[in-house]
Image (cartoon, rainbow, N blue to C red; front, side, top):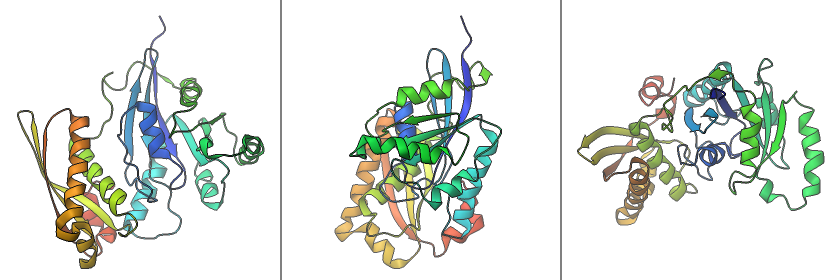
Length: 294
């Protein structure tokens, strides 16, 4: 019997091409948060898939930032470049029918010394499939890709083909993580991400990007997890948006985040959330480090 092969696989691309949706689809759990708001992913998030012959350690990265220049964006870009230096295989994700300067900026970061698979995502949104072939040919000229795989992460189409393409390049023998592990991130980290996802999903059109979540206390008592968290906003006016009329928005954020946590943690969760104003938090190097940004 052949030994299990394993390796680290980066998922990279410009913001909003569906990297987090792809990661969640591949491993079968919501590890990386998803919203319509660009730049939702801010950290490197690892998702682990183990089958009979392979262990894929996927690393979802923030979308590479080309417009904003603050400490948060610099930290996110460092996350992308550090990940590319450490992994064995790269999945470069583009949106079907769209290839612009933001995609080309990511291509300039791609390593020359390891396999890069071009992933054409959102193929379910292409009305005329005939347009896909010239699009693939055009993007393929930008880099020497090891393979090209069209997928729909949202619909789960051809993701098995993507796994088969990546499996060929897994370099290690044996498991890198226990076979039942889904991520290397802590429950504390995942709790903060789930809350932040609900903030963006429910208030994305009203609330600016400069919002984050701090877990101030995380306790486990028997089967119960008690989580106390602060939604951090940049201005006093943003605080009222998060709270909502009569506290309705904050209650809904807490309720939906708690349900997701209970499903992932497989246990009861007591969740208490409030809102804090920290002006300029996304340009505060010390605070960003405390929130897990390297």
